[in-house]
Length: 73
Image (cartoon, rainbow, N blue to C red; front, side):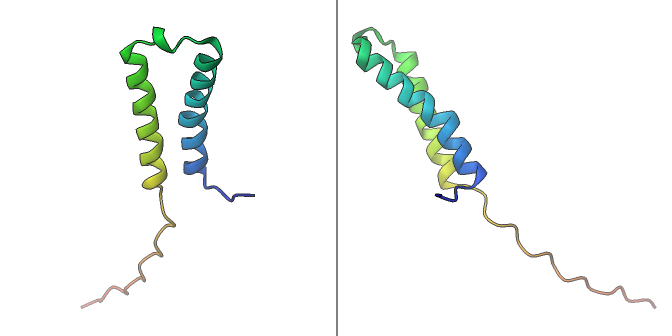
């Protein structure tokens, strides 16, 4: 498959799917005119949040620093 990392998959599922579902439902029912601004703001914030998570996803962890032996006086 697409080899998506968990952070990317979560951003798509938890932010993208509800936005697509809401847009399709409002288009089918013709209720775009009844939408209030808080709902539109919530959709916009979810889109921005999903984009930010995808953009700033975690990278592979850095290799551990080599151990330096302690000096004994």
